[in-house]
Every structure is written in C-alpha cells, then in structure tokens.
Length: 386
Ligand SMILES: Cc1cc2nc3c(=O)[nH]c(=O)nc-3n(C[C@H](O)[C@H](O)[C@H](O)COP(=O)(O)OP(=O)(O)OC[C@H]3O[C@@H](n4cnc5c(N)ncnc54)[C@H](O)[C@@H]3O)c2cc1C
Image 1 (tube, rainbow, N blue to C red):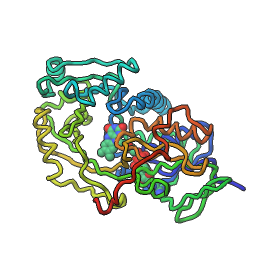
Image 2 (image 1 turned 135 degrees about the vertical axis):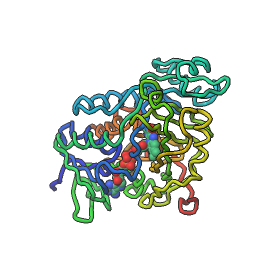
Image 3 (image 1 turned 90 degrees about the vertical axis):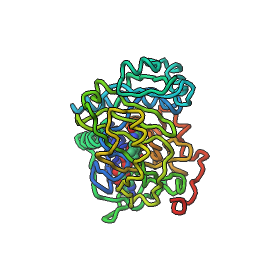
Image 4 (image 1 turned 180 degrees about the vertical axis):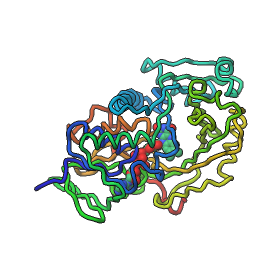
C-alpha cells in the first residue's frame, strides 16, 4: 500500500508547527494541515507574546519540559536566524506562604535552578513599577522571558518546509481513521494515507479524537493592553514578566512596541466557548473592569483604561495538564492537546514528544502525567454551562 508521506500533522498551530519541524528535521516526509493560514489569529497562539519560564508555579514535572524547550527554542533560532525568545526574567509575586510561591520555591530548590528570593523592599527598590502588599515576596527567575508566538509558528513551519515538509493551509481535516497498516486522513478535497498522524488541533482536537469527547473544555482568556506613563520603565531590560496568580491576580509583559503593556487576569475563567468555530472576539467593557482595578492597584505607572483588547481560546483538561501520547487502541495516532493555558512555552518539547513517539515508538520525556487514557473527569455539557 502506498503512502502520501510518512507522517501528517493535523493543526499547524503552536504545537503542530513544532512537531512538523522536529519531524522534518529527522528526514521524514511530513505533511501539515491547517484549517486556516499558518499562523492565524483565531485560536490559542495570538496576542504577540507568551511567557516562558524555567521554574514551575504549578507542578515539578514541567521543569524538565522547560529545560528541553529552551534548548529547542534556541536551536530553532540558530537554524533560522530569527529571535523568538527574549530572556528578560520573570518575577512571581505573592504572599510567602501562597501556594504558587511555595511551588516555585520547591521547584527551584529541587532542581537547583538559578533564582533570587526578594522581599517587599528589594522588589520596590529594583522594580519601582510594582506596588507590593505588605509582606509580599518576589521570586525572580532569570531564565524566563517571553516568546513571540505568531513569529515562532511561522518560523517553525517555514523551517520545516525548507527541510521538505509540505503544508496544506486552509484545508480542514474532516476525518482521521487509523487501521493496522496506517492512517487515512480525509479533507473536503481528497483522502491521504500516512504511516502515522500527530493530532495537534488545539481547541478543536476532540473533534478528531473521539476518546477526548467532553474531556476538553474550551475557554476564552482575554488579553488587555494598557498605555504606560513612562514606556521606558516597562522595556524588557527594566520590567520582567510579572506573575501574581491569585484569584484577583494578573500577569503582565514588558512593552514590545515601546508604548503599550499587555496584561491579563489570572483569576477563575468566566467564559466557556461552546463551539470553537464561533469564538466571540469582542471583549466587553464589563469583562475588563476587574482587571483595570487590579492594574490600578499593582502597576500604577499604567493608565488603567485599555487601549487594545483581544480574546483567544485554549483547551483545558479537568486536571489542567496537557494530553500527550498515543490515541486509544492504536500506535498510529499521537494526540497532543488540552494544553490548559500553559502550552506555548513547552511547544518545542511537546513537538519533540510527537516526533519521538512517531519515530521511536516511545518518548524520552515522562509522559505518565499526560497520558490520554488517564482518569480525566468529563466536563459538564458545555452548551448548557456556556
Ligand atoms: C490568551 C492566552 C494567553 C496564553 N498565555 C500563555 C503564556 O504566556 N505562556 C504559555 O506557555 N502558554 C500560554 N497560553 C497557552 C498556549 O498559548 C496554548 O496552550 C497553546 O498555544 C496551545 O497550542 P495548540 O497547538 O494546542 O493550539 P493552537 O495553537 O490553537 O493550534 C491548533 C491548530 O489546529 C488547527 N486545527 C484544528 N482543527 C483542525 C482540523 N480539523 N483541520 C486542520 N487544522 C485544524 C487550528 O486551526 C490551529 O491552527 C495562553 C493561551 C491563551 C489563549
């Protein structure tokens, strides 16, 4: 039986573009499919910047993914001459006994990661843009910073194409059918045959992976840009990524255009997206009021009235861990999905996971926490909840 190529990557977004590059770099014949252009602005990858960090305010398992991702990000930069990652540091703020501070400190101590623990006065002196609460501390991760997501996706896809990959843009895949000998991939135009498939469909992934039905909830985080009184004070050299992941918390990026500072809320998500084809891109005033107040409180050098707003979406699992591994009952289809708001920084490592599974049948990464068949609560009916 003949194949159109060795592997197809379905979804050439954040993770899929990296899988495509890692596969093409191994000399495999690879096809990528995306329903939109590569990159585009209608899913998880938009909004100019994404945080990268070496530490982990969530779970220690991510530390090894961060280390590998950093190596691969730097490899992609070296292969293409494009600057994608700026390591200007990250400041995680909060009460000394807050779970995210405890987790970050545990991860830096367990893995002997470079860091500085700053008290309230240290932070106020070194970063006068920040307003601290009495008793707050800051953990500075110098090996953190920001990625340029749209440029990174474009760069990886272009590099993969240079290495021989073929990318079908504006080509939605409607069906993926594995069998004993390979996988049939169907689009509106025709069917293709591959030895393996990597499913990296982001917010749409469960449509092509029936075993995930109900297990990924698509949510709509917003991002908000504020004008700075003194833009130079928010330049990357002076203003590290800031993260205060509390219910009334926020994150903020340095200014990448010399004028505006992007921020977002870290509290519980309010909006669920019942149908990712119908993402509501309009951000209402009521959605940003809470963040405006948070910005007024913690970053007084910003005008707390938004200049720009945007909405994107990501797929969330009930345990907030990605899904990475073989699909049910087949060693032909790899699933990489449900990145739960944390996936971009690790996109190169998870792309490598896809390439390893396809070429070696196993991964050098610990994938147990991410197993597609792990006990994963199904979300309530998303239409009713939305
Ligand atoms: C607002 C926001 C801020 C975030 N901030 C951070 C951050 O600072 N740091 C961080 O690490 N992470 C962050 N994340 C999370 C991170 O961006 C996501 O986890 C990651 O981008 C998910 O990548 P993905 O490849 O799964 O999805 P996507 O990048 O959306 O890619 C999926 C692709 O699949 C395509 N596709 C789907 N179905 C089909 C089909 N049937 N046929 C063809 N193509 C298909 C889509 O068109 C899309 O291009 C953030 C997410 C959001 C939304």
